[in-house]
Image 1 (spheres, rainbow, N blue to C red):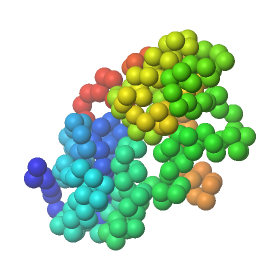
Image 2 (cartoon, rainbow, N blue to C red):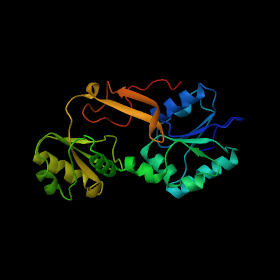
Image 3 (cartoon, helix red, strand yellow):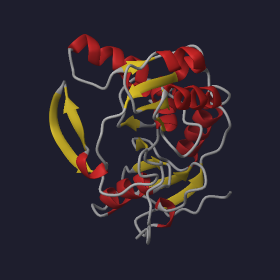
Image 4 (tube, helix red, strand yellow):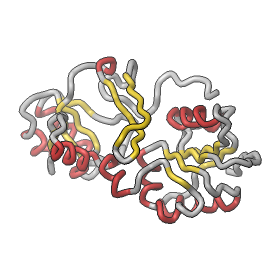
Length: 250
């Protein structure tokens, strides 16, 4: 698709992803007069339709190398030297982190290098790090087969979720018994490598009882942060990636 663009005179931002997360970034930057390119990555178009979007295009390429080349070509064609990349999904954050050296010519970054990001990207690494640091977390198991999975938890309910890749819009699947867990695990193992599946204790309570904390840190010290409570989600047990009830992108 031919990009829609307007001339930009200030260093700006390239937001990769046009869903509700991208829209939040576009609004925040655009209201401060920062020009923003939005690269659609999939079916979502919300952020690309915002009045704060300066230019838009589709992120092209099937592989990481092709997508990296696309970003470099985009920077060269539209004089985006010094612009900042804002990936808005796990996949695009991984792309930027793993190809940081190649992209560092024209772009600056909001995401850490891969050796840091991979701990958050792979939940198995995050669980192991939290255990080493003595941070409380739900009990977690990794199984090789569905039969092994059904023998592991000593209490229910639990959930099964991918450690890295996401295969559907649902992030996790609930199991209330060994037989339920065995069936869930067997089905998911046909979609993803079983070694990438986590079985985890399900913390009781709905979204209105769950809080998340995100921070921007400088050498480990938080300089900006936000605490959020999920007041509604779909499905009710395990949230999907798409925000329900999205309306005007403006």
